[in-house]
Image 1: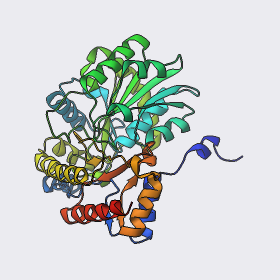
Image 2 (image 1 turned 45 degrees about the horizontal axis):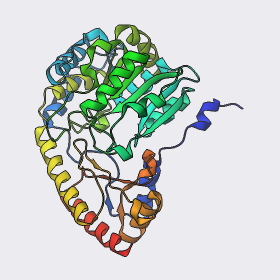
Image 3 (image 1 turned 90 degrees about the horizontal axis):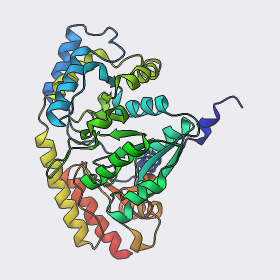
Length: 376
């Protein structure tokens, strides 16, 4: 066999697969991908233009430009009340690369990684490629929160890490202080890594709570992955960063270096401006759309928790007696509306509605969803 055997174990993204299907059959109203409908703010784009005009097109340091890493430290201190030095920051090609580099740095074959389902599919695929094993905890019956017994049952002598996403994709839920405390106590007791994917942590609608990174006494076990894509409408820029202890980052930088060498130099100047940008207008708009979608779903009789962050709604379809793929496929074929099946997130009783789209698309899609449900 010529190829790496682990490659055969990786599955293509079901999210992309379903989105392609919906496009191919002519879906008119797509609420599938998590891509902000805003354009990148002009001030951020202008910073990139200026960097290009100043010929900032040489290689950047592997870990990222010092000015950008310093800006990241200042941002995290201001927003998340955590304190890192510039040499504890690695600038990455989006949070996806940060997560991938972290997993490849920490895992040996056979190591176990705990995930909370529903979950974003990236984690399972990268852990599998690295030769690790995923241990799933189904949180869907507990309002997407943790209990001590659930976590303790999942921990073994092979546990290397737990992956957290808060606010969560696909549910929009935020881990409660109680859930975070459970993770914290488990890390102190069993000593494993916490990989925290925080790409939505600036899109929060109610009182903002600090995440797992507030427990700085376990910082040697904390790996924080962040992205500029969602809060600043920059998904195509592909820029993010990783925060970790110097001892971890020393080795993660080697993985990063051989994957991408460095992140585009001129984009990092735009990143500095982005971190100082107030995205309140975007968040307020998402909140308004969240409230509208939630109220419409409740009127239709769907069971759904009101999301606290991100820009997804995750209603249950269990009572309709269809798999999530069949439900969404029929919705495309009969009403030309596309959502993402919950099976893509290891939760087949649900569907994900991405509401970061224009108002007309939202209204038309929900009108047609209501008509579809009546037929069921």
